[in-house]
Image (cartoon, rainbow, N blue to C red):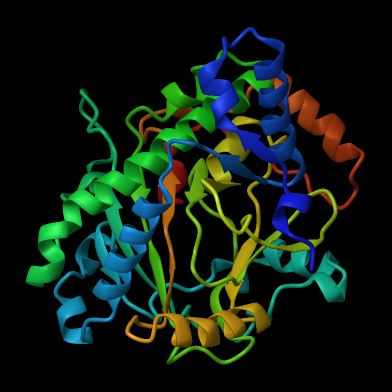
Length: 365
């Protein structure tokens, strides 16, 4: 198996943060970031500010939370606001791709050996999720107040007192890193440094860890999250304790099993639909899935021995970075032109029209 560091470019935020923007090394690193997102729809970030210990504290808390009895978890559900905050329990979210013809065409065009696990059974994902809002409320009247409901703090005493501080600390680590990647990508695309970051200044960002119970759903080839793309601008993850995330490189159609370097301060960034829209399809939202594979099962066995008292739950510490709901989303002309040139050289890519619309409309669609 290839390791991710051999497949996906690693972008060093330390270079960007420690040297002047005009320096050749920073420019090269920014070009590398933009090229990685154009080519793969994903990259690895090395960021010395990110603490492995914070990630562990976060994963422990989320494991403990999802190890609670179902009736305790149900208290944190908010279906009346479409689960915008609080918990979404297993078998609620369905992979949209299963009924989406363009998406099914993409799967059909992949080499059979590179295809995702079959989602045509229309089964909902067995994963749970918790949404914790990390956005700054806009200083103006937003047209999309539903995207701005108050956060839910779980009630269990051992969990509630640590909840907010742990969520905020790890959430801010990922938010800082992803906003720096937004700046680097803008520079690499020939835009002003603040262009993408400013567009997301009042975005309804979400720390949205997912949890999959590997006791209940630990059979090989179980789909934990079906083949899909993300709706937001950029998605960032810390290291999960269990492998199983596969991403598809846009340029090759190859399935890449995501593997972090064994140690060190790394995060994974993936591209969502909002930046695709903004760049006129030059950067394309990346397809991915989470499944139980051989590597997942080997890790389950290892963790049973090394951490016998910990729940066997696969946590993904996902952070969804959004553009502001009231931001006018329209393709940038010079990037659309590059996209058209790039796409015409890649016959498999279908042409998509990116209409002008508010980000909030794009989310509602």
